[in-house]
Amino acid sequence: ILIKGNSFLDKLWKLNKIIFDKTGTLTRGAFFVKSIEIFDKSYTKDEIIEILVKGENLSSHPIAKSILKLTNKSIDSRDVSNFKEVPGCGISYTLNGKKVIIGTQKACNCNEIAVLHLNINDKHIASIDIDDGIKENAQTAIKQLKEQGIEVYMFTGDKKDVAMEIGKNLQIDKVKYEMLPTDKYSEYEKISRLNGTNNVVAFCGDGINDAPVLRRADIGISMGDIGSEFAIEASDIVLISDDLIKIPLAINISKYTKRIIMQNLCFTMLVKVSILILSILGLASMWSAVFADTGVTLVAILNTLRILNKFKK
Image (cartoon, rainbow, N blue to C red; front, top):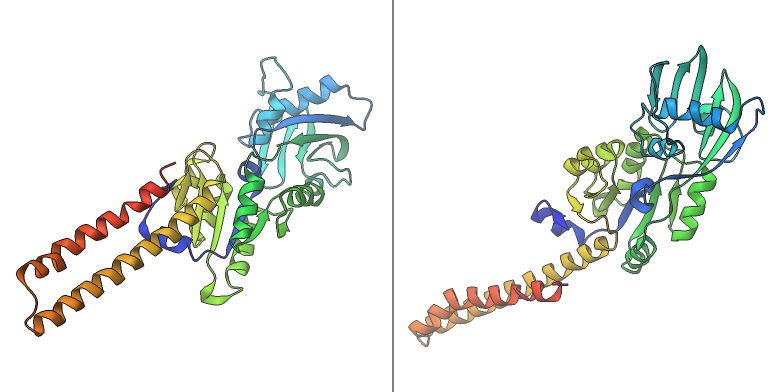
């Protein structure tokens, strides 16, 4: 766990709400295509795949990588023109004079239930179902966070059915779906204002689109393994191994560190005040003065080392 400053460690024990991005954070982000359902039978599955990979070859989105795995052939995208990528919606381009859109239900104006859809010349041709299974330890991490009294949210650009299913499996308190990157920022602002100044809200994400919210958040948490450079740079805490169980661990470290600091502070003040009173009464020796200075410091250091022993695993 990389914490970029003592102020963020201090904020962790006050945390009362945490917002998770879905893809790459709660889910593995290693997408794979489950199925392709073709509605226009004038196209074969191989033709559909060829159209998909030509466009997705120009995209940087993680889902694009799963589409590219559908073929072992080299991909030539030179006949693709007018390529556009709209965050949270999909991609559009022109191929052999035909207008192609690959994206969400909203982008393709269809009612089929799937992650992606293919439109050609404004006609719905096929639906592609993508799976990006839930991360190991995600359920345990959320359970531990809720046991600590922290309210858990999930933000995602996915359609309602997919988002609610994952939210139900992970027992997340509140799920926001079909969100654009700008929606995540504005929704974070609303949540952060709910309880006034007593609200400490963390945001956990991994992508370029999450960077503005990570920067704005009281505590921004990013994934160090699959997270983008922008997200890591914008965040305050980095989970090096992408293990979500480290979030409740970091909170426990923060709480224990606060307890140790209070113990050191109370012990130091008690000893110094006691020695001061004894010296006023003429009962303090030179050795008691040395202990009040150097001795107290050594005791505080030794007490602080308990943090390492408690969390050394």
